[in-house]
Image (cartoon, rainbow, N blue to C red; front, side):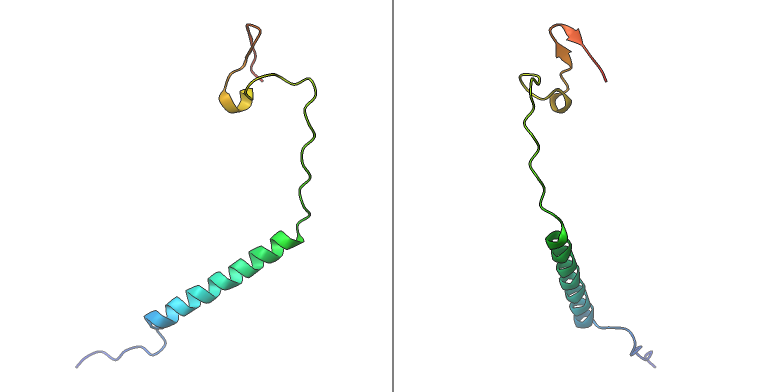
Length: 70
């Protein structure tokens, strides 16, 4: 005798539908959060800053022969 199929187990189509619905809900929630956030203001220009590439980005801490680490 073959075991009876459990009627409470969702089928492949049902699982895909649940995943699709969950994705749609998550996207709607994310869109609502983005719409509720205030727009970001641009950062002010740096005055008398270091010339050349940003040292924190490129790892170059030397300035006029002096190496600093902070």
